[in-house]
Length: 508
Image (cartoon, rainbow, N blue to C red; front, side, top):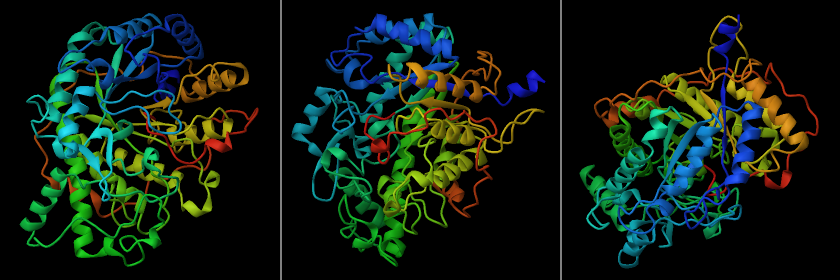
């Protein structure tokens, strides 16, 4: 019976604080971190997740890597008997309201932008976003002779060489490859640092000279050299109906609009594909799983234009699955998909935002499962209440426990954002412990669950046409029960209303 029940076990990880390694790349919180990890171990969690910031490790100059602070953190995680998910964080931390720390991408990379500001994502008004390099420079050798993709590959290679001890020991089990702002595979379409406020539709961010030239070449090849990038999609804080592009029967439904949206979303998929191919080569044979993160853009989900998803690069409409295409690309690399907003209920969202996080989660998880992927989730906002935990439990096993073996679908893992003293105190800690137990199907902690096999080489590149076949027909999500069959009992059950809504930039 216990063996059958073990198939219902969902691993639980906890995200370490953003500033566990300081802004000057030092680990100064040894005692505090050791005590926190001990409490996590006592709560039965399986492991922790950490941002490994490019801006810290390669901050001093090209290939001048300094991993010493991270090695100290990893030693403590290893000592605590916890597993580790490492994020290759090629993005900036900071610049948004919720961020407690500011870690830009390396200064020597930003210096290239002083003479060529088009290395950064750019909106139609010409405002640059320095959180992450535009995917337009993926193959441009602008960085002391290296392309952006080569810099990412070299960083991952150095990580593998320097963290060999932890890879060999089975401590590091997951490499999440950062592919955009906040480590998510998306465009920086809703930057709070530039005045975006929830639930604005955001903006298309493809007006740097590299992406503009790419679009013009693609349009000419398609027989439409006269087509330009959109000039009718509004600004960050517009609502869809205020724009010509997203309004009913707007540009997004025209031949030109569809061409642009396909190009914009396909560029993102190809970017992910390219960087994952490098990651796969680097970690080939290691007992790790590769993963990427997809952002939970739940506002404007309940209107036909799905405007906020489209500006972020997810070409998802009522008759087109913009997430299954991404999932299909991931199958090539044996990679898993990490999604967010697993704690949100539709009823908690404001009516004006036409938001539907529950339907979005169901769509994305179903897309991943249909493509045969391991699918993981995390919460978007810090919550300590039973309602949030029970929503996560429902999403972790949509049809509940199967006492006779594996449930039809279940999450591969869940990562809780984020470790804090508040989580580890009093009722919050007690409720969290109960949540971990329920995620483990009441079986207690078991480190033998879901052993990771050596990473195999990516399959041959998939033609984009093959990937796009996953977009249509858009199938109904798998059925999800309304509530979990293993609920956490309600003690305090008050979420912090003030923090529900949009997400910050560092939320990985």
